[in-house]
Length: 185
Image (cartoon, rainbow, N blue to C red; front, side, top):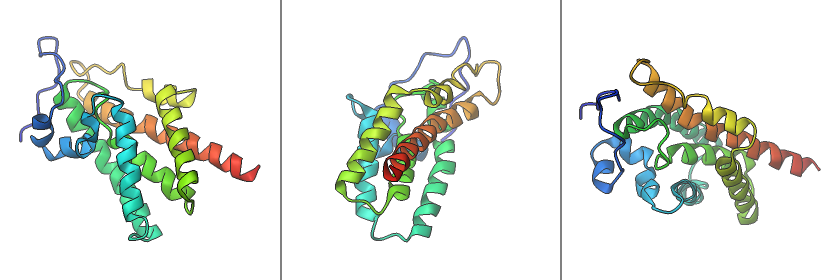
């Protein structure tokens, strides 16, 4: 499927993601979290819950090295799927894109393991706090590429795609920092 043209002053406004939109391109399916990002209520939370459920299903089937590889690929491919989908939605940081939550929360779960349900729930709550409230460095990462202009910057959509991923990776780092401090205390 050809890519949508970059947004310009005369381009139509943002596109609302739907099931039909999601199925129109493989990048959309992944970026929208296989449908979890289409939730009308808290799509980021739904994407994180989807990531958690998939992690629980796969945690005993993948080795540590396989998890590390999956997460690394998820981040790199995530940059591409977020870039493509944001461009097609004509929005620099659409809330319905949840692949960033998925990859970042897998990173959190992988690095806090082994832990049981309560440890994973604490990680979930902390990650959602940092992702939703965006304190300090998370806010900085979130705003880093919000001011790019697709009409004047040919790399704007790539920057936006990376920005979508970056704030969740910073939220994951903050989550891991709090858990590490808690464990050391």
